[in-house]
Image (cartoon, rainbow, N blue to C red; front, side, top):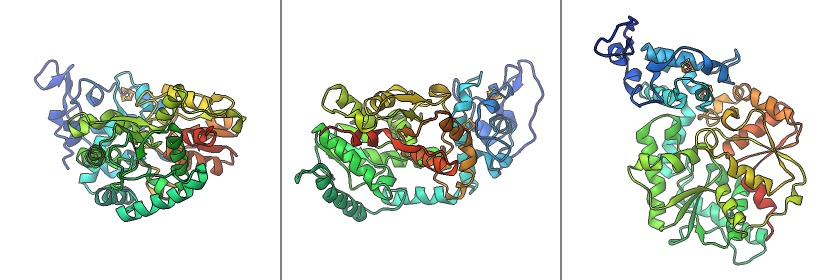
Length: 421
Ligand code: SF4
Ligand code: SF4
């Protein structure tokens, strides 16, 4: 990889310069060539080196973590190789909290994802992420669950589901063409968290609408997004869209997943080059819609306490999904408490950007999540909810590690638990 010495000479209005500063083409760096292409957002050449991003990053504390200004400067100076061989690109949670404070609007998720894509080309990718992508492309599931195993699992959950709702005709359906809704699960719902799938089944059951899952069981995640590789992200997106369109569904309903939501709800047309033939909603959004219509009713006395709410970065800061989860949660308990800060200034759980999916980071995640743990403790509450199963896992582990004694749930599972059937 070319790491030509950067030309820092200030030139006035000479060709190939912008505001008198030498441009990427003169630096002959791949990362610089790929950045500086949007009207705004990834133009690292605009960086003022002010350091506001560093002060907004809650991860770095001397025990590791990214330094956003340093990443931007390294990219701007053509130090691709050093950046790609270092750890910062993979430590970054792609949470964009630093971006909120950047006077030039430089989107750190774009910078880091483009850097990671170069790292992959150089063979630098966490083995777990590489393995998950391979399984996903081969089987449709990051854990490598085959179509047969999927059917076996869903049919087993379906048998239990009959007792759960006390209705011999109830089921967790799969591959039913013409269904109104297709539920796209999180891989954890087909493995260690089958109870969550049962809970989501209960919500669909109470909506009294046709729904199905697909044995082309493309899951809600898209690790191509984490690693910044558009080709992989597009391939995974098509694996979701094609079976869904074949089934002729109206709405693709996403499991609680932060990056899955951001990618499928906001980036899908760009990834597949057209609008899909269905609308996209998350399961909490759908449950709220049916609650507003008066179809779903909840008994908040089942959860007679205040619950703090954690904003997943991909759903809140990156997608603007601040209010629907809070509104649904408020119907299911004795009030919603805010973590401080929250919303636009919300702090990542410490497991974002693919770090949670890398099993070598278990200790590190207790450092990247330390600020979040302090926020949780400051609420003085014993309950916390969120709308992302990855955040859910990380927050639960933080609670245990820091002895917070806070029970962590997802909003949709709390809604399901207090449904009035
Ligand atoms: S906040 Fe923006 S302009 Fe300031 S150093 Fe960071 S990337 Fe550069
Ligand atoms: S972890 Fe978040 S705040 Fe820190 S550099 Fe990455 S995107 Fe920015």
